[in-house]
Image (cartoon, rainbow, N blue to C red; front, side, top):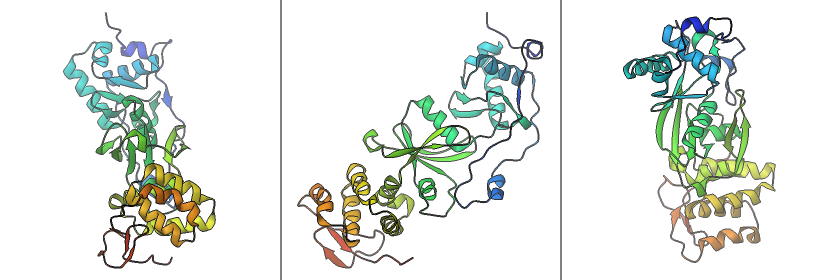
Length: 313
């Protein structure tokens, strides 16, 4: 016999549907104003809760659940499959719960004040990867902004992971998922969010490697060369970590471009020897600045056509 969470149970002396009246927290990216942040928060009238909505929220509170799945609620509330689908769709649309993937929903521990549950994209991402049992790390524009390379406020979160790919909107946040081999995941740091989640952000050096490796996705060359130069001026010890991340997570094109630029920045040959060894003797030519005409001087040491210069900041 399924357990039924009826309204008279919700409002009994023993069980009370608690409301979260605490202040909401939002992550504002570097150089964004509070107004920009609040403009992104959906303004909506208080959601009117029906009988089944109240029963579902009582069910997840009583069981201390973070996730619910299709089929579970039909059984718990003694409703049919169509009623369950309509209920979950209605609650996800109104912002009471978040649809993570088909058949799986993220639910609040308390009824959100005002009837709409607002959490950061980092929180949603962390919970999604928990459900998928995947590894991930945030890179791209979010990382470039976080590490101070770029003032542009990103409107999507780019995620390298070992589970899914493609563009998805989840809980009001836009994601770009880049599926990659687990060997290319690494060089990360933990970022504590206001939701008390440890989001996984790439390190400064890994962000630079991604800016060169994935230049066509992010349109970051030649700008990333300037970011490398500025970083080395501020911290010369940064060089070794950049070389290590380039060798571990880059491809030959990345090694050529970063190696050549480090040589131009007067990094000694002995420090660049590992990069040269990885390239070997076969050095087919590629442009140093992709997207520009492949015309310029040839650097045989790094296998590059030096087809431009870096604008001075």
